[in-house]
Image 1: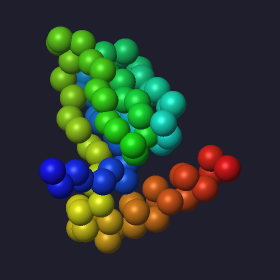
Image 2 (image 1 turned 135 degrees about the vertical axis):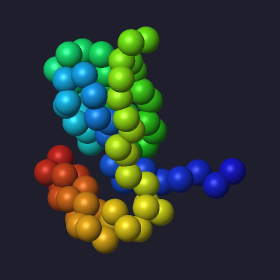
Image 3 (image 1 turned 180 degrees about the vertical axis):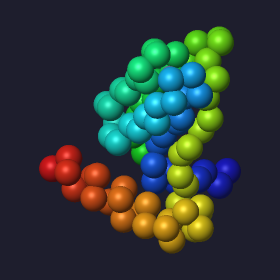
Amino acid sequence: MSERKLVRNSAHCLDCDDEIVSTHHHDFVRCSCGRLAVDGGVEYAPRVYTADARWEDTSIYEDDLDVADLGLWKWVRSQEEDDE
Ligand SMILES: [Zn+2]
């Protein structure tokens, strides 16, 4: 019921050590080894990965206040401005 609002849609592939971030709706990003991908920007957070992929979700939600305090919120806002 209480849907959490995404401020950063990202994941970290433990196989190739890539941090991939989808910054907008049609931004499909795949990691170097191709096992993991993110899509959808901050509107939704689909994860595409192979059965043998090892990865961790590094997405940030609006209620992760500790993280927002570190300035990542600001970083996300500036990314959005770059899309203009
Ligand atoms: Zn990878």
